[in-house]
Image (cartoon, rainbow, N blue to C red; front, side, top):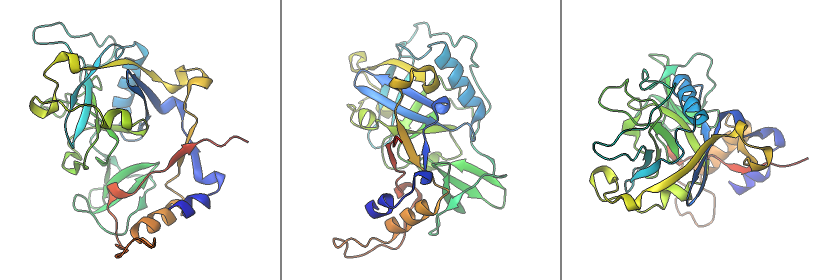
Length: 274
């Protein structure tokens, strides 16, 4: 893979779009999240409204479930008042999938258990059903989802989680996914695990404070992450897939010859200047 990346051209990379990037600042570090308005436009817009009114500032990571997810939310206890969502919606219709339409997908050749077809679109892992013409984001490591109650139409973006374990693909088309982490996963994946049900923290002293969440375009240029992503609609990315499917390194006794969706890396690097 290193050889593939070394051979890429500048046009094979896409600068991180500050208008669709969230900066989650925790006491332990910063997490950078690429939003996916092409798949969940209403939830992304609602999250932007919450961010604009500083809804998330002072909330907390309240859940860290081993091999599953980390979740932040309003930590108000039983009987305590919840923070107002202001002019943001308190619940939205589910955005579990969308029409394939003109969506460009770089497919994987090896099949999938959860969908007829899988691949990548705009640096995000996606699945597709040709018979229905629907496409959806997949629950791979680092993907960001919206918490909800029993009703599919009960999420708003006020609670979000990040996949930190083995890809829970059974959640596909059951949760609205709104993006993926592109930097700072170590600040989430290494948090102490909660010991109450579903990994919630029993002791509020274990909560990890959310100092702030900001939209990249609202930050000064010098405070934004200077990152670019390897475009998934290029010959370079197809070569990367093949490099990971067929391992030619001397160490490998079996070159494998296949790969699953969530095992394909999505390279991110510091933006080249000049």
